[in-house]
Image (cartoon, rainbow, N blue to C red; front, side, top):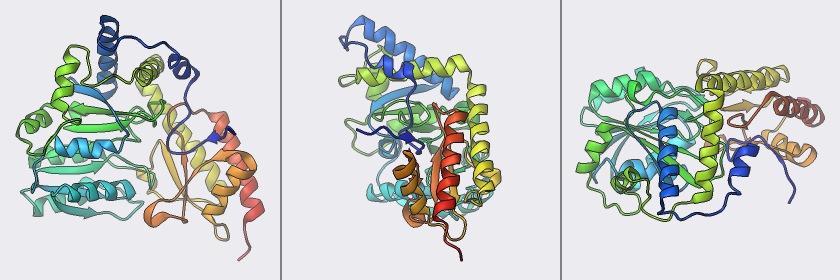
Length: 364
């Protein structure tokens, strides 16, 4: 298999320490050794989330978080406000509708931020909304939405704030308790620097209270069962040991670097990519004031097709970037710079981008 230079928005490159951790042997997943290990890992995850509440780990992809959040806090027929500012917000709204929730959509132009002003206007018109479905970092557009100000707004309204943090957590600041986040989920394959396969869920007290009233049937995704088992250092089903080893190693790296330095590094790498791409004539899709620290969406200059750039970076330089999703398909390219990423890799990407742009740009 050819190894490519992975600059997509996930899965992301894995550090050597994470890959080495996955070589550890299997252990008994109900024994004292595992229980001590798992309790320690959960404490590390709580520190990253900046919460005194619960952080749980479930087998699954980040997208499983959409269903987990809904079935554990709501009931069929409940009214929710779905903030749609990109493809992943669109998908979550669709999942909510399929579960029989009444979905009030907040439509935000793709590339713009879902501000408290925008969300607040719709909330004021819908006082019976039980929850707001909000994407912290919209991977499809490269927009970091202003979660702290929206958290304060939703708390004043009285509804729950359920957050898709898949491409944000561990790469962007998160103060779950002080920001008023009731539930947030993320995926191991993003800024956590691990393989796909784990969904990490932070749950606050208001979400736990809602879980006791929630009317959706729950079995495998019942967070109450995961919480009860976690108290003893267990999981309801067989623990995905290799992935948990990887996650612990990633948490060790994050703590060694320090959260603030991790966030500063992500911001600096984002600026490097944007400045370099701008010099080549690319434009940022996102409002610069809300540009994501973990993924950048770029509009190519006139005479250059986005999909051509994606294909030629792969074919000629062995570098993998993303194209657009949904209504942005064929219009943009997206560069991931989250997790185990450093300046030399991004300088190589920009050099390749310059070569491809010069070779394939058609005069207008």
